[in-house]
Figure 1 (spheres, rainbow, N blue to C red):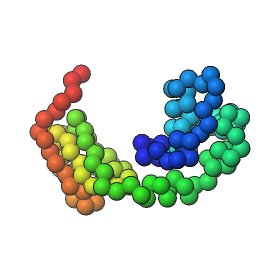
Figure 2: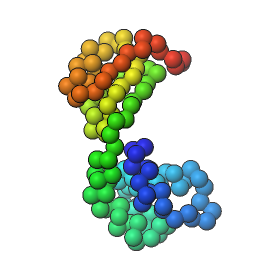
Figure 3: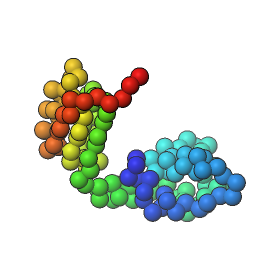
Length: 130
């Protein structure tokens, strides 16, 4: 999603007078992720115009843009608990994963990284606190 939000069509959505920054960001996220309800699509069209609404439904630009993302490093200060974290990362061009390791399923995460050709680095250091 981070990368899709950097697509020129997302970044260049018109600035709407009086719209709060967070509301604009929320529209950009919905637009980039193709995640709007019918009512939101209608509101979106009213705010940003028919051209933006038509682009919302066009699937090719998302895939074309996502395909350009390679060599990404994913870093986590907590454990990656499941192999599907790695599988999702692989779909978005992640080449390296850095995480503490040491969870009950770290072996599955390491195996998934190897299967996807992703370099997996364990720091042994967990940085966040609850």
